Length: 146
Image (cartoon, rainbow, N blue to C red):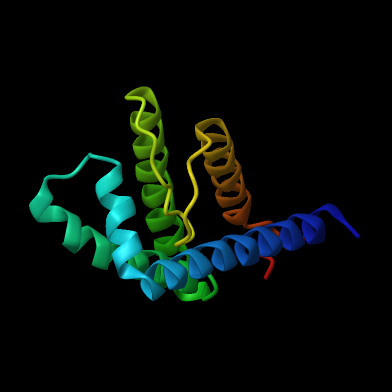
């Protein structure tokens, strides 16, 4: 396999993994909004009035961005949205950990106390996949590979 095809396959795999992660996370959050609301509130970053709107918005943002990553025409917007979401998640996790908050992550709709080092490492890994998924290898004619 030549380097162009290898990069294209790597970008495709990264997109599929990211789409799967964000679609799963969004649908799991949506399936238990009460738990999602508790997780959002647990970070203690938002005023009370914004917790419910954030609870409703977050799963849909993950679902829409994850799905958009699979479509060529919406891929660039999905990359931007996922970069913003990952940045917000990373800041929230670091802020909660720095303040010593013992919370349930809520990342995939489940419960369980947060291991902050793991959460930061996981999000940095997702950022790396996001970077890889943006690859647009060129073929020998200089055209973008699929």
